[in-house]
Image 1 (cartoon, rainbow, N blue to C red):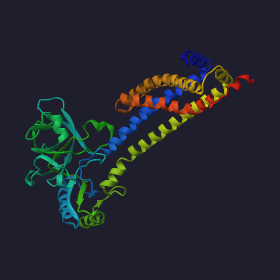
Image 2 (tube, rainbow, N blue to C red):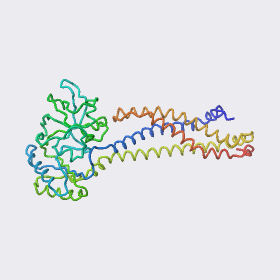
Image 3 (cartoon, helix red, strand yellow):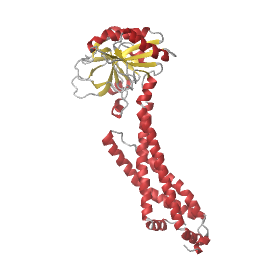
Image 4 (cartoon, helix red, strand yellow):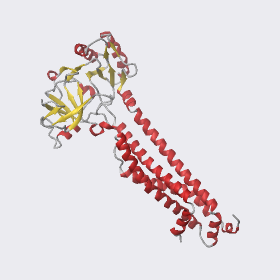
Length: 410
């Protein structure tokens, strides 16, 4: 019968190797748990729905040259009207930003005028009554803006609108009982109320960084066309016409007025291109963390195999003596598996504490979310199984040592 005490005695004689493997397991567990957590966060972010109907959506970044913001109003309206008449175009708007744009407007929203603190944070989207159809937003309650509610606004002096449309997520944050439609709220630090006339199912904020994760689907739509020299034109094309519109739209806009530039890198692109670009870093980080996990697990497994093989070579005579005294192959195999399990248990206990400590440091330094203990539990099980799998081959070689080894000199 196998006893733990002889194993502990043997491990005391090999302190350096035991500590080395235990710490290797601990370090691997700490890094792998946090790396897998980061991978899961990045993949969740990439898969997050924007609320847009992303197909057949073209983005044009337009910047006027030598034109003041106040003088852009007629130019912007002329561009939008011309785009809506362009063959292959279903609808078009001028807008300040859009989901995954990388930059935009954000502010707080209060329910009561005397509240000193905002009840929720949100992004702001400005455009006309064509905004929801062009973006493909799904209105689940209330109504869209009417043309008489839409006005021009200076980008540096936007007034509080009488009516707004908000997302379902923001409606829940402001009125958890579900009574947002028809209620008045106060956007930013204004004392003028805005009435919620519509609620859309979903619309993501322009940012994909962790600082906006808590309010990623909070958006307020305001019926303003911003007079701004660096506006964004959002175009919904008819099915199958996206490539043709991407070519004809810039040409038509230049014919209307040549005092404009489109950035070379991202001046004209599809939303699919924008999504790929904005999530490039997240995909890269997920791949990098995956490679790190595989390398660390491989190194740890190799270390266990190497050290156990070395111990088997050192103990061949002792193993032969045990076989001569009646130990079976199964006894020898169980001995090395149990020995590895003890080392692994110490390693994962230390590693679990290191994983939590590492995550707390990442939380304070990089505003990451707290590590779920489920990742630690999964990591513990995975490392213990890895250790048992890695030690199996040298343990089976040890079990095949014959009793005659006891009579050979070392």
